[in-house]
Image (tube, rainbow, N blue to C red; front, side):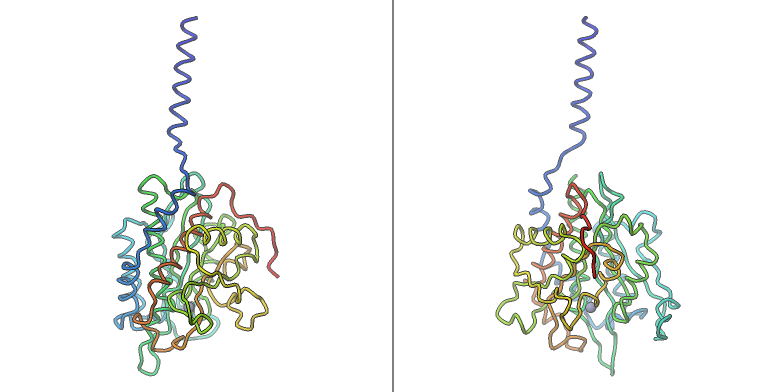
Length: 341
Ligand SMILES: [Zn+2]
């Protein structure tokens, strides 16, 4: 009798021990702490360097782009953020033969750059957060710094990665894994993201979403009175869940005006097909593209850091993070319930 009671107590303690070891995190409530880790001054410091003349406009395969790549990697090393499991460095090499296959542009070997925050209980499911770090280089002797295109997305990714890593360090790490992907060759036809989609490090079947950022640092003519907006493109094409995640993350954290103007497939600009998320979306992966529109310096030498509106860039970066946070931490992965046609 006594022995049995002892056994019961011992087994009860064992179960208590197990359940407290599996810490339950209230991801929804703590999200705000990490959204607030996205700092305007960090975005500015990094963008001032990424979009400086030293980077020579970051043409795909150029020395300037490689310098920018080195700077990006340095930020990850400083923050203790590693490259993905299964990779041997922060680089995915994208060979010149691939870059020049469709049109010979005489591009040199280039690289996608990746960093990784491994998930906890759902680590085999991958959430990609992407932005391109190449731009158009030097044309007619003038450096095109591409501060908005896509320096803004480049520095946003660094801040987002740091916020996820901080969460992880504090035991609140994402349940799914976060793959931060700085792609190359975008300006020559989404080449780096296509290379990744054809040579993925993690199976595309386990890739649950791509949150893609391309130009979120300025305002367009349609929003002259306020920069408190962002264009949301593609969120509802494959997954009602993703649409709802994007709507709710904004209501909870950022209160931007979500502008769906370019979500209309009949829109002649066809922006949905014009940035890197498309290489994920075409493979049936629910993807959202965040964008603040074109302006008079689009693909011109005047796309400089002085013209970036850092209050807007910060808010839109927080928004992208909040979307990725919810996708990474929700119980059920995003359901694909629609066909993109
Ligand atoms: Zn771009």
